[in-house]
Length: 175
Image 1 (cartoon, rainbow, N blue to C red):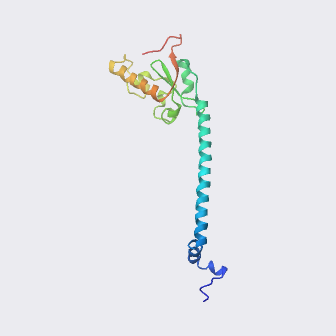
Image 2: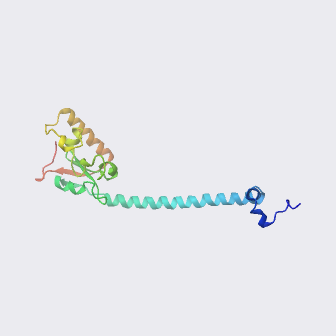
Image 3: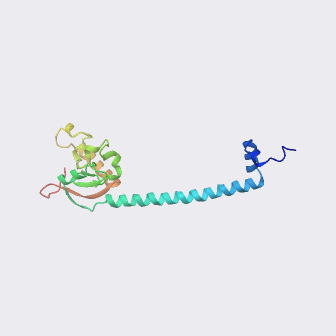
């Protein structure tokens, strides 16, 4: 008979029996269901709040990285070489300039293609080289020109076009 009625202090001595009685009784099932529904609603609200916060932060970053389209001199690109995380990253390809900040992992300071950033990368892309010292300085072949055009089309499709690349005297820089 003493087993049938457990005193409150005795409940803690047998935690498995206490949990079984607390959860698998009518009151326990209703309470468990209420807790689960409450947790679902609260976690959904928290997830929505965090998603909105991330979206706002991303929109602020997009606004900060945006550049108006204009004419760029080759020397001006050097300031946008990916070394400063607070600035966009610019790459010149056959007379056009692209803002590739969304590819910071590739073109940023520690990226594998950082040599393209902050410069006219036309010859590097056309010749499939990353290190400028590997350039043979020969005129581009027909296949290299096609490759350069393919890269330019890729950049047009993937990244923001922010202007044209011109020589110091203002004439278009086209290879």
